[in-house]
Image (cartoon, rainbow, N blue to C red; front, side):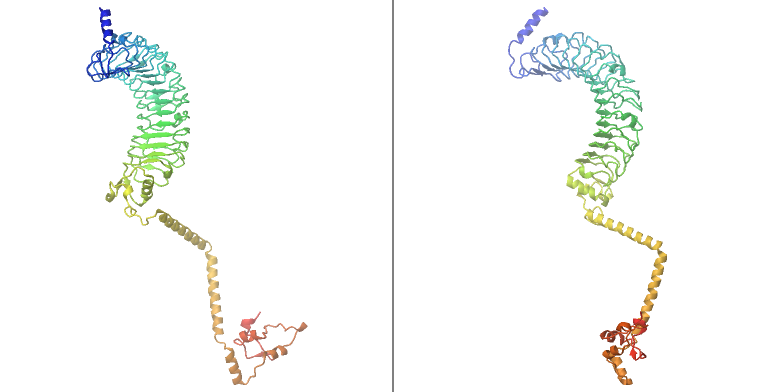
Length: 556
């Protein structure tokens, strides 16, 4: 009887199916006999259809009410992709897939499967992807997947798994990606990882570990991605990550870490991406990420206790390109220079924190390609004029003011220097003014220090200056009392004194040895110089019959 029915069904497929659907395509489904794809989604099917083209390669039956996998699969030996997700599958009979030797992807996620064994997937020799996510599986027995040597991705997340046999993954020599997240594991199943020498990506978050012991991931030397998010971690052993020499990405989000595990992370010298938000640390201390010289992206989002980022926190991470400090509601202190010295930093996200201002010396702003600073309680004043100009020039994300009230919710890029209360429109003028003020203060301070240090000498110099000034004034007063050449000639005529010619003075002057004029206590001037200088100071007394110059003026 079964044979007759089988022949009848095969007879139905002899007639070619034209267009997008044919004789054997269930109502509401889309059957394409050119691409060999059948799509029956949200069609309220409760059993697998048996009237489809036997040559189909891709069968999508998600979001239906199918309760079991029956013998209908034996008609479709060319299947390469099957999606039975989001149905009502409670169990899978033994040898249900025995004829699917070409099947490469099988999606059974979002069903009600509570148990599977090593015969459930018998026949799936070519399977590379098996998705069992969101079922009710509680344990993984020995050799469960040993009949699938080509399996590369296995998703067991969001089940109720509490026990994994040490040989549960035996035979999965090609496995590259494993999901065990969102289960009820109380510890890392280290023993079962020993057979997964090719594993590159492991997701074990959303469990209840609380503690990572030494060598927790022993045997996973080729692991590149490790996800420990929401694993309940409060303590990480010093050598927990030992052996993970090839790890590139680590996710520690949503745990209970009170400090950055600096020493533990230092084993991960090749780490490029670290996500560590939603933990309980309050400060990013200096050298928090020491040893992570290849780190390129750091994401700290939602750290509710984070308040301060210290200068030097990234001193060992010169290859950082992307930094995310977002939604940290208490973060308001980012020390000047905390982000300086990062020559490769191109993307910076500082949104939704508690920053009231941003210092121009905080980071090399001009080197950034993208900048996100929204949702901060920014106080807009002249100190942010530089940022307003930068946003306009580089077309970066906008910043809205929170204070003062007059500028609340106004975009910073739209504010003029006058709106910000700046005295000068050009920030270079402000810099020049500040420089001049500082220079003047330094100069006055130096002068004051000099005067204080040499105050005795300065006092003596001023005293001498005043005495000399009085002496000179006295002499000038005497000079004012002398008379001119004309006055002398007039007075001489009135007194009957005969002027003596200059040539006669020269002739009468007694000679010394060699014919030179004698040197006495006075200097005798001849020629016009005497008339020009001595007549005003000439005395009425003579010596040896010659007039002499005033002692105060020409005395040697």
